[in-house]
Length: 296
Image 1: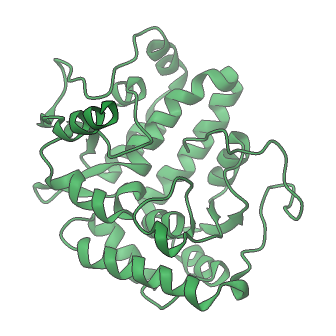
Image 2 (image 1 turned 180 degrees about the vertical axis):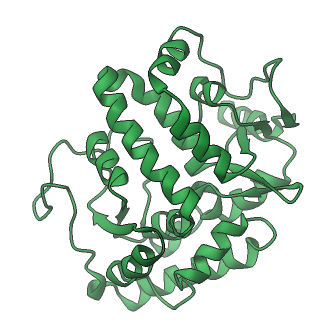
């Protein structure tokens, strides 16, 4: 969800009232399809043994191994049959109320453009590879699919409760679960966050590097914790299962949680608290080296 200054305030020309646009699948060039295939092959070589079992099952169930950028209409037919979700194209980042409404109604909004060949390793704004490869496979999992819909409903309620003031807390939950979450599976950590599974470098960094903290998930702790959008994460939060993530989300009355979080100090990136369940106390060597390089 982490919205930024690129968000428009009204639907652009050609978009519907719900901000959706045609995917324009027939307009993709051979070169653009080849970029998808390159990114897909690179990630597929990395993710077995790293990605959650549910993510890998989703790749197969949705037939994302087929060549070229997926056709949203065909993809949605497969997804609807599994969990009632569909994928809709939007012209870029959309307003929060639009985003939440789509999620609450089991519509995942995805950009329809794909990065250039010289942007394989990093892209500031999410493209179709990040949105579809990174997010959609887990929407084929019934439990995670329910979590995403519950998150959308929660976002709409947050807007009713406090307007924009609670959204930064909800953004942190999205960031540290949907975008950059880790999960315990079979006694090991696995990646499921879309920002990790769609990035070759972070797929390795998130599990193998000694730099970041890996901390057990706690709702209030996550909602108090700052995050960074410009580089690898300094914290990763670990859920015990998707079932537990869904349970916490649907059983929690978020109104008192927002009030409690707002009354406490923000937790700085990379801080470890006395009550944390620490899987890995990171050295933060990567972040420190990057900070030093910026000062030179």
